Length: 296
Image (cartoon, rainbow, N blue to C red; front, side, top):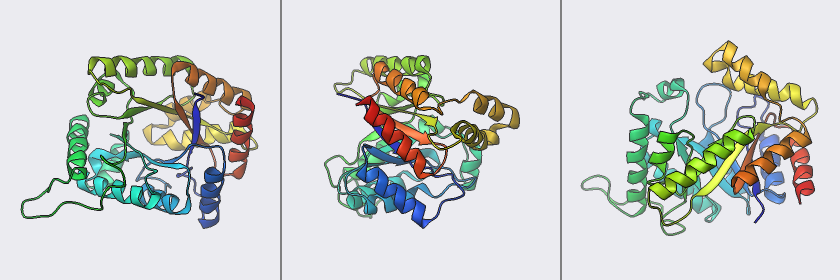
């Protein structure tokens, strides 16, 4: 089966307005895309992931809706369980969720949480989410947490992990993995996909992992300039020099370059790729639709 292609909503763009948001929902839902996802950040110009995904669930009817990702340790697990179940209710069963630990301590501080024991806490929280979805009463004298699930077991849970240790942990509880290579590097993705398969085997899982991945790209006019500017802005919180260095290396800004990474991902065993565009311009969608048509 050919690799599916989805889009990550451009959630950090300062130019967003109601018209642009609704236009993205409509184009993605009516286009050749498999998924509409959205990331989560607190600091910076980003919109709220939970609100955005709720609107997307209500305004679409076909495309899969995937929060990508809940920075789980900075949220109460029960709140995430309730939000995801509600989102799936609105979407009529089209939701999967992705969870991870995030990479910005400042987001934790904004949420009045300390970024400690993040991976261990995420393990515990995923187990708690599944207990809530199974109907377990979380507090003595309380009641089960609603709403009722649309499908048995609740939405699938993907793990946003990359390294050996985090992948090994996720293999014990995740339904799949969301992998990442910012510039869509074939070797990076091959290594990550091989690691996912190996860790699932070591964990003795009897079902294969869902294998999803993403990278930054742009199909807008002046794509290379816009891609580098976007990556720099996204990463400048880690420091001026590393942000400029990484942004300077990003070049998935031509149809051929984007196509090459998509082909490499598919060859590595990725089942679905979620593209993260540099802008919210409709030209991004136009360009990627043309690439999908060319891939056949």
